[in-house]
Length: 292
Figure (spheres, helix red, strand yellow):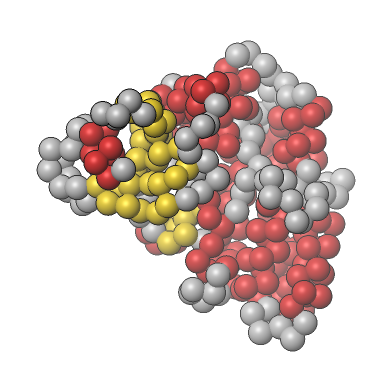
């Protein structure tokens, strides 16, 4: 597949090397070497993502339209907070086999999941910074534009230089983007339930519940790494997050209003609610640890 990625990139110098293998939709990601000359050199280093064989073509058509067209129609996504989409297409090899692929900006940095896997220590200050950036610079601006996503987890978040948080895997926005661009100003009740039901059973792997689980896990890693009763403490944190996040004046109440409204006056209310939510959970964690 290394050769396939080099063909797709029309590589003139340098090479493409395996970045990682496996994933929900992908079989492999190949990255250009530093300074490589290729079709997308104006972007810099890029990643070629190959999708699993057998992915339904209607689904790949959606993915392709997202990376080639829809992504570039939202000003918010031009921010360095989001991994940039470059291209997508179908590669036909010499044996007549087809491979679906997309080309993405390569984002250098530390995947947040590495902290949660205890590969690196995380301070309470960095935890606060990550969650504040996640809500104030990624979730609220994107959701306010009608871009809905539910798979928020450590593997989809990366710290660029100077602890600048960015989001990977923007494909999860494609359905809401298509609906928004088709003129739909409001999301259906089903859409709202699906994307706001972060508190669904924690064992599900379908994306629901990932935000509250991520908040729980990063709070635990930062504030209670040596806890004697980890499962009990995680349960307490989860209950606290759900209570504050889903309360009548919590962030979800304003986010749901934003998704069904064209009013920009909600922006300040959402941010105020988010900051209140974060302040409360940080204060409770610090009080529990007796941090001044």
